[in-house]
Image 1 (tube, one colour):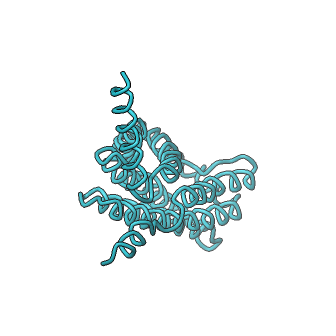
Image 2 (spheres, rainbow, N blue to C red; image 1 turned 45 degrees about the horizontal axis):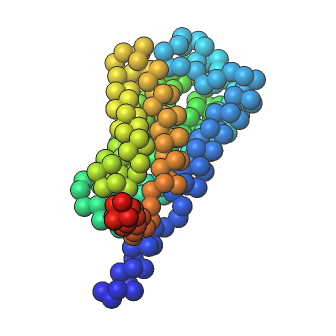
Image 3 (tube, helix red, strand yellow; image 1 turned 60 degrees about the horizontal axis):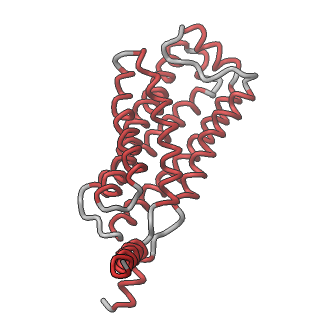
Length: 246
């Protein structure tokens, strides 16, 4: 491989991670905001609520559920692209540790879980299904399990897979990398919601902090290590010059 080819390969970082994260977040939050507005302020019911309340919500707000599922499924697409791009960029940056693979596996599973949850929600918008309370309750539980704990836990793996090599290789500011590790820990603990309902508060905490972190990291993660290395050399040269002058 020639020097030109090697340089071209190293600088081919793919689409902007920051923009992908913004699109993913906008679609996901849009599904929440639009469906809530269409439902007159009513929010997607908790699976820990009464069966009557859950059934009433889906029977009264079929259009809101339909739109929410559509946007949620759409959000899974940029998340999958973000994941593939981030994993490839880490490898182009010289990361050979498991972090890049962990990020790839976690992100793709998170996207798959989000898409699966959207499909369950879309099914809940079908009038034929709403005549069977037991089926509605089962689909609601599946939508929560996949889009809640299932999605967030694997989203945490994506964050951890980027944060660890970002810290060890100096690709991210230390504060940002440590924040990612903290978010990943909360995300992994959020699966306790499947066992202890009171811990379900960890799900939105981990989810929304992870979204913000992925956006910030998308704009901070470099495409090459050349600029960082050059910056370090410049700082070293400047420091030596100052010492010589002294």
